[in-house]
Image (cartoon, rainbow, N blue to C red; front, top):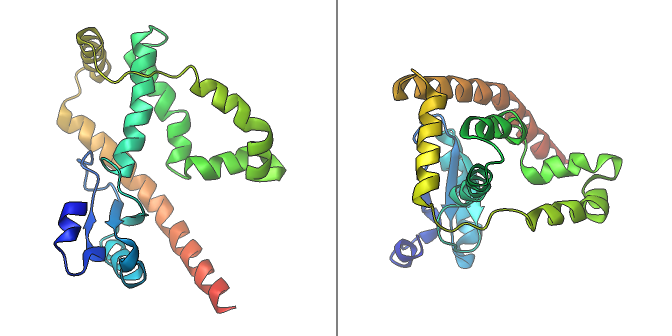
Length: 203
């Protein structure tokens, strides 16, 4: 992205999408800009993405890969770790993720959810009293940087068993129906939130 920007007259206008997205219903889009382009590009890039029904994020510093891909990879490393250690099988790892934090992540991000987790004290209470236990969990998380042949085969066998007789097309349709339903529920709330912010600015 930085290489492309260096050859662009208006580099702040560059936009792209995470490569893991194989579904047209996935809404996230990324706008990457250099510091000097911030004022000129933020609103324009955001408007283009919103018109295409994408949710923009603004990447303020270059890193390897897309932000969304990196978050997905971090979570999946722990999924692989738990499977490799025999803590859960493939199907239970998926169940724990999509029926646990995955449900909430489809509504709010981790930071806002921990703000709620802090109760009346919000994120301040979370950081003061609950961040310690989370840091303790970090110390026990997986640190894999490679897939061993054994864990590859374990995951392959587990995924095929979990999928059962459902084809790739059937699974894709099931996923997209769920995603479109979630987007339909979220759309009115997003518009209301945007309108509220504009009203606050006017006041």
